[in-house]
Each structure stands twice: as structure tokens, then as C-alpha cells.
Image (cartoon, rainbow, N blue to C red):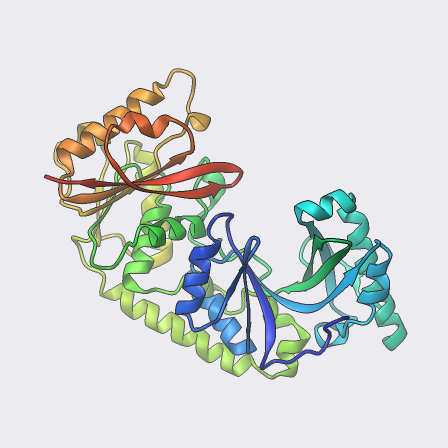
Length: 405
């Protein structure tokens, strides 16, 4: 069976996210008016295309959003070609468009099929032969900046494997908000992972935020956007009105959605600028021992909000600050052993973080995001909650501490 009937009022979508944040993404999608189902690596939902586009605008946690163009079941590799030729490819692209294909396996599929590149090739052959049969010509493959990126996900249960073919609507990852250059700072948190940490910690606009080890300022910027209810797409949309691939897709043009889309963009940009103007001092505190990091954070804030005056900056050693801000919400991502030189005394650092929190940061909730090992035991504070996350391939935990007076 192949699903190939494009229905703009009831299309199927898949939103991917960092590993371990699927439940948080489900909560967010529900808050945004969808009815999501948790799947491996993200959530699936059925909705109309306008609501899906609004989800792309407003999701803080999704990495990418895909539209399902077809699914089918196979028992052997060559079945992909015969089944995929039945997909209504012409609903989504023309022969003048370019494309690339990636294939992902689940664990059981890896035992059955070993070469994802070969299966991508089978899907490519089906697509271009479908075009030749219907139009006498075909689209070209483009691996760098294609108009269309397809994802082939294969999941195996029992004797058959389910193949789901998705069209990437975004082009660029949604976590790349557009306010930072990751190449200038080592091992930064991805923006949507930082947002997931804040959501998991129940951060709200009522909290007074303090990051004592701000690094590139990702947690700070995401906190400001959450507190002010600024759409995460704002930075991209204010600079490039059409940053997403779907604006160049055939289905988008056929539905004549450009005028509606531009009205939504202008609304987001105008609303966000209005909220930025209302940002006030006394809610956001930022510290880093490196002066270059403070300069970088200010650069990111200006790129995002056009101003930095609403943030109180410190350029000190957190363990020896002259005065500590009166913040009730503290979150930090201290160095892991993975990122420290051999001369660093990592255990001593974590012990001293705990002592500083206990003695200087009373009446607050403190959150420490770090690698999963025994380092957190050096903090010597009672953990009220720990939440699992992955930072890339590193298994991590978010530890919560209630610091009382």
C-alpha cells in the first residue's frame, strides 16, 4: 500500500528534535494546537499546511519539519523502486527542481539492510523514472543546496519494513536561529537543546534569570525569547523573508500561499520588535570569566534584539564574585571533563560550584547541565530532580537543586 494523495487540509508531518526531547516537543506541539504522537527522534502529526507552517515559525524545540509524501512496505531492497514509483512526486516538485535523498534506518533495519546509500539510490531511480514516464525529462541531483531534500526513514517489524518518504520543509535546521556563528565558540549548546533545558526546568517570564557561566550566551538568548514570547523564527525572518525551502516547493505555489505567508511573516516581525522594545532591566543576569565571551554574548544579543541594555553583565569568576545577583532561577552548563585540559581540577570545580550556590544563591532554583557520570556528586547538594538529555552523542543530565536560605 502506498500513500500518495496530497491533501493540504490533512497532510502528515514529522518534526525531528534532539534525542531525549521528544516528550517536550509533544508538549510544545500540543500547546501550539496540534495533536502529536511521539515517535523515535521526534513527533508526528496530521494537520493542514498553514498550521504546519505556523508550527515551523513558533517551535523552539524542533530541529526540522518534514511532510510525508508516501509510505509503503518492503521485504527486499528492490521493492523500494517499484513502490516509490507510485508516489505522486509531481504534487511536490517539477523537473526543473533539484533534489537530494538521505536514508535513515532504525536498529532492526540495520540488521536487515546494511547500505543506506544504496537504498537512497533506489529511491532516486524511482523518482527520476517516474518523471521521465510522465514528462519525458527529470530533475537533477544537487547535494549542496537543492530545492528539495527528501528523507527516507525505514523501520522494521517482523518480516517487513515500513518505508516513509518525507520532504524537508525547512532546508536549514530550525535550531540555527541566526544570531550566532558556532564556529567562533567551542562546543556550544544547540539553540533548541538550550530551549528544551529551559522548558524542562519550567522557566517562565516571572523568573529572574542568571547564567553564571554563559559561554556564548545561548541559554541567555533563548531565555529572553521565552520570557518575551518572541518567535524563534524572528531573527531569520527579519533578515530573509523566505529562509525556508517550502516557499520554493510546487505544492506551496499551487496553493497560492505566498501572500498569506508574507502577512504571517510581517506579523511575527512586527510583534517581536514591539516586545523587544518592552524588555527592561532587572530580569536577566549574565556572567562569564572570559572577557571575549562577554563581547561575543553582546554581539549575539545585538544581532537578535538590537540592544543589550536590559541585561546585567558580570565579567568575574563565579566562585569569587564581589556581589551575586538576586536571581531566583540559575542555570549553567559548566565544563565537562571532555572539554577541559589535563591541568583542570574538574572535581574541585564542581565542588566549589555547589559551595557557592549554597552560600551565595539562597532562595533560588539552580539547574546544572552536565555529562552523565559522577561529577554531579561533587556538588554535595540534594538533587530535587534530574532529567536525561543528549548533547550530540554525549549522554547528559539536567540536575535541579532547591537552594534555601
